[in-house]
Length: 153
Image (cartoon, rainbow, N blue to C red; front, side, top):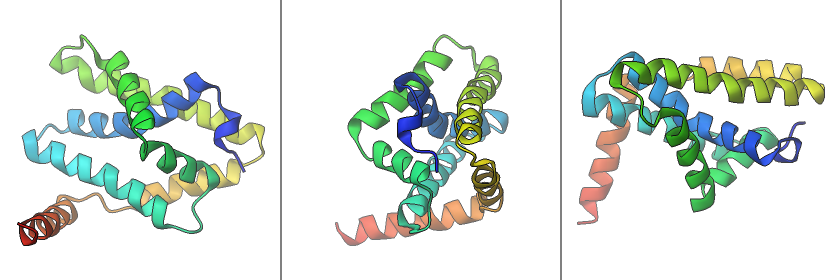
């Protein structure tokens, strides 16, 4: 199984940045203001939490989650996104985000192929494509989070 050790520091930052970049790409492809941004933020967070709570998640998924739980990991991801999107005009963000996502996917493809885990990569893609990222689910999650926050006030 491919692990974090299979990546250079720059490649790993691309992988971490890809978590945020995916949300930017979706938001830019279908801009829907603050609610759309919140929706993608919750979807990204939910995907990370699902991976964290999944005992059968790959070592690679667990490493991504582990790093994203640290301020250093989040900073590396944010810096990657800033470096790719800085100076972009509004209409350029979508294409830059999509282009920036190609790099981590290429890195992951190479790492997984090098370690003979093409089947694991296909499984990862298949699971990602079956996830529900609908507005209805995001709205329910937001309402639940809001109620929890309000119950503590």
